[in-house]
Image 1: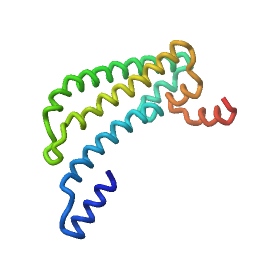
Image 2: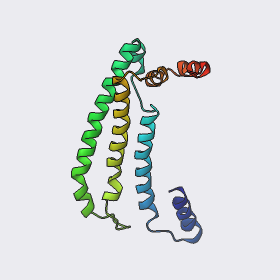
Image 3: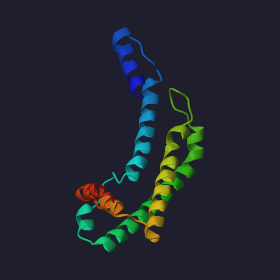
Image 4: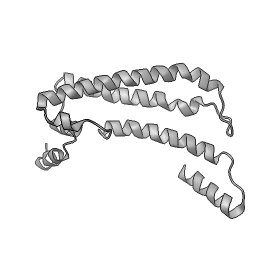
Length: 156
């Protein structure tokens, strides 16, 4: 994406020409990059959370919040997947203006994101229900990075 945009800028300002598809494809790549980044951020507890309230709870309250949070996320990604699935036939028939590729390739990333986040959420729910949630995972959920550092120093 960066290479295409840079090359297009050089061609436009240096040679008064450019790659026609560069802008459109870089926009599509940016959409994909954003949605793949959302899955990675979810895997690393990088999304925003209401840490102030959760910090007031003890271990049991934090685990309950983790459970409810992942259950709600699972519901949301199910809606995202279902909507993307219903939209896919429409996007398959529509083509991008410049590249002429089916828009299903662009907007299909939402199904990947929904499945990726769902797998992570299901795994977290499984770990909570089987009692395998570690102190480090709870600290990551709460955003207590001092506790994570202390746990890592002790080797836990």
